Length: 454
Ligand SMILES: Cc1ncc(COP(=O)(O)O)c(C=O)c1O
Image 1 (spheres, protein in one colour):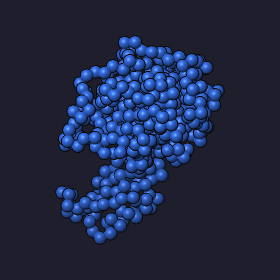
Image 2 (spheres, protein in one colour):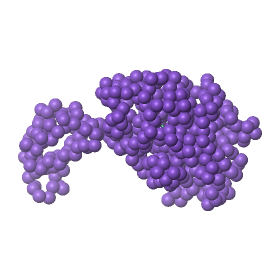
Image 3 (spheres, helix red, strand yellow):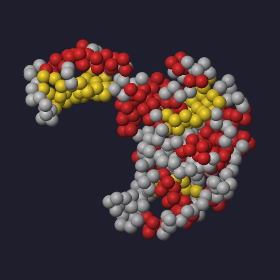
Image 4 (tube, helix red, strand yellow):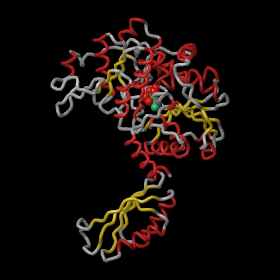
């Protein structure tokens, strides 16, 4: 793949370009226009994974992955439900994806294990395969789209796998991986739909029911559908009455589209904080397996995902990525009111978030809660005008984070100055009180309150 500036963006495990002058299609002799079929994921003949498959996976991966805690949350009282968090972000590589990856790798034939596997992934599946590939001595190649978080790309390289960064989105990365896999005899491992992946992810459901046998419902984030399909099979088999609730971001609703259509369809995916959920075409095996086992699907807004990440840091001391926090976001947004008074397990299934992104997300979450507020007021340009404004803000118990004043751009009045502030407030009510105070004293006030998460 070549970028706009014509430079090859593909890098190998050492972080060096495979070829600085030619496109990789030429370098690898790959035909990226050909549709390479994945024999394990055939939409015309989907495979339904059953309870025995999940049990077999659990037996096989035991000892190879962490049995993560599933603990009662501090937030239970706040939301009037017994909330348990299944903390799969505590797996070694930071996500539940290790379950499926370990199982797939452990089931390879000897000759395939020697040749190796290939996968396309924006991060967690790649990381999981890279790590367990190293432990099990299976060569792993991962193809990551250009949009993949830098931290995940670097982590895969550190595990010693071959990393190719190419494609503007997951779809392009996958096309490349399928073509390269075909050429080199590497098994393509679909991260949400290979039958062994789905069975492996289901082991999370088995652990949940063992850890919280009295659960009424389980909330699970949905990308390609492997986690919810496998876990739902396990949970419903052992406790048919348990409610399974799937969560998607408002920017990637492919699973709901597929459920409505009766088969996976291409669905638009936008920029989302939950990058792990951004899958344009969900898995056919996952969809078929999950059929009849999902009681409800909900769509969370991005601002609530940011808020959920913030709350998990502040109240649970847990760093969870957007995809992993989507379940809590659904509760905060009020999308599951029927669960009040019930025992609910929420899968916190991934914790790999770029530190820079985390900083922005925290600010977004603070804004959504009314704890970070941006506003502008026009004040008199006479000496003391800005000092008076600063005092009025301080008198409200509000702390100024940023302040700047604009004189030249104010066209109407040369004796006034526009002051723009970013301030810290306690909560939305405190922010509104500040707004009232500003409007009381100043004629022109521009207040920017994010009212999505009140
Ligand atoms: C943290 C996290 N949560 C949830 C998901 C969704 O899993 P699935 O694609 O199996 O639906 C992913 C997928 O990558 C993920 O990384």
